[in-house]
Image 1 (spheres, rainbow, N blue to C red):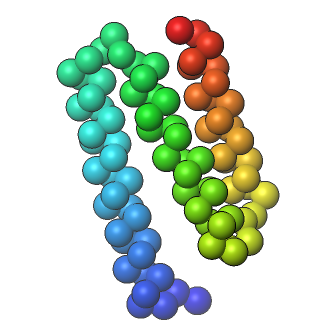
Image 2: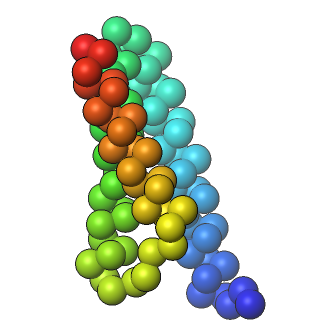
Amino acid sequence: SITKESYILVMFAGMASICASLLLLNAYKLAPNKLSEIMITMGFSMVIVALIEHLRGNKMEPHQWLGALISILGISLVHLKK
């Protein structure tokens, strides 16, 4: 069930995600030749969130671990392309 606290957290996460996406697009517009650095910076935050959840003792679902691993793989591929 949805509680008031979880609703507020979801709304905050949604707004933060929209702001991050707008900042990412702005960064790309300002420096289109620096796409790999921008993508590495953006993708690494997902890995940090996964690690923080694990350290807090929350059980992460397999799809959350998969998302973190895909982020790491994407960061690695972008770095290798350089």
